[in-house]
Length: 460
Image 1 (tube, rainbow, N blue to C red):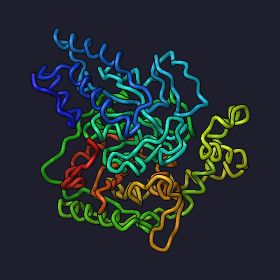
Image 2 (image 1 turned 90 degrees about the vertical axis):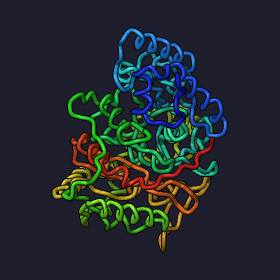
Image 3 (image 1 turned 60 degrees about the vertical axis):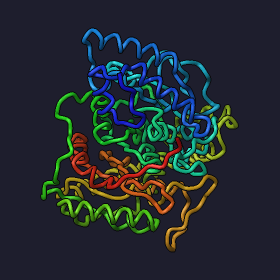
Image 4 (image 1 turned 45 degrees about the vertical axis):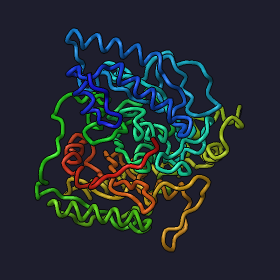
């Protein structure tokens, strides 16, 4: 039997598993070896489920031997952000506030993964309680970017993205309240999907902002993201998207330039423009669109996330404030000062923005824009200059992603180039609400043109 490939996709490894060219136990052992080799320097995992993963692998190998094959996730090692309940392990949310008591039951999305034959390889580090974009604030220490150990992997699902980028897992499940799947996917050079709001159940996940929270996959390819989306959403109809040799000429992409493209790092702008040129050459028709009230996005977002987050944490903030990291404690405490009328006004603004994105998509198959306006920032950096504008790093990292948590549209982040320092740059494709499958099919067709000549320089 051949050895598993260290950085192949789910589609590739599942074919080898199905044909019994590799054993599931060997795939699991390879991932565990990668974790053992890399986790000390990257700090991507909080808990490693080595024993249960091996037991599951042996069971799944025995099933294949008697002709029982569960599908393309059969025997595939997947990591999980440690804000999601996995039976038998504690859900720490990367915080000293939480106890070490193991969860009794799986979150529904974990149940769906196990039924499909996926193996939970471990639980990943994150920005405490998912309330941050850099991964610096964690009771277990920061996760580090595999492209540069002195830089952020993005957050809050930073450990999840690192685990996929380095081959410690074939995919990971994260959460996204303002960009927390897409931001680390872009910073680490992998694919991240935020589906339409409500398509993947959030039960069994510690909430940050219930009206903005989304669960979703982080993977190496678009098709892998589709396979995970299909499982997690129990969307068992439809066909797998497949890349096509040429783009149909009627593919229409809209660019919201005002607000979104006004303040970009030079390398990000270059990578984005180069990608647009490749897509145009491939036959896409690209036009400008407008989100008239885009300048209201930050205020609308903050007036929803802050009070909703505070409502969940109010008791522990009063009882055990020093158990939180300073940055997260400060942001949570801000929520108590949001007036009810501001929250109601923000909910109205949320609907206005949703309708404006719907309108922008009326004559487009998808919107296209960068995921992050900057490459992964260095740890400890509080501000960033973009042309004549100085912004907080946290605000800059959220600038291009948070709108679509407010509106609930499906969004996919795909690697689209590199900075001069070989740091990944990501591109977002935004689809029509509740048509995530269509977005994934389009993304699969565009993927090779977006990614271009992809190179990786992750630690080995």
